[in-house]
Length: 171
Image 1 (tube, helix red, strand yellow):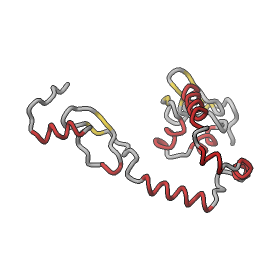
Image 2: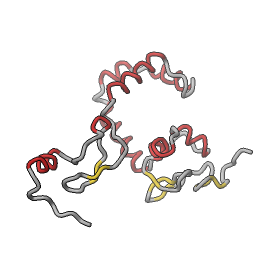
Image 3: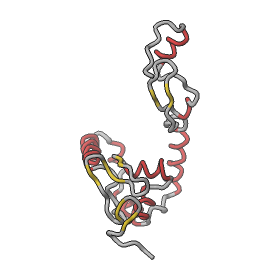
Image 4: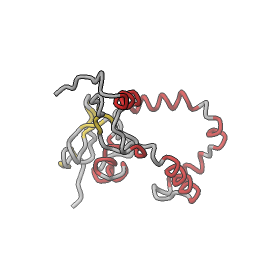
């Protein structure tokens, strides 16, 4: 049995993207987010395309309208400065690749994706929240710094110099 637009779908309605001042409603968990595609990937292990298909949503629009407008404005403002990109741009080839579907990535594209992933290793966030042992601030360390105990060099230095001047902890 397939769902139709308007049918109940988890916490939302099938085919309807629910947006209000708090953000976009996730059909799977019921929380609201600014960037629903990113949330679906991190929290539910599905790509934005998989999330759209599962809930009957349109191809675009998994970002809050205000954020989408900011992204669009930043792209318009910086596009003219990307000389190499403009020179190498081939709209006909891009359209043909897009029509081929999301699974039709060229071998050169796959190699570029792998190279980017290899060079970015250790620069992304770990995904867990850690509390600084010195000041109590919460932070999310990078993958390459999974054993970090302090939020900044300043707190680390203060800890290494001794316990004097320790900030008061809220309990």
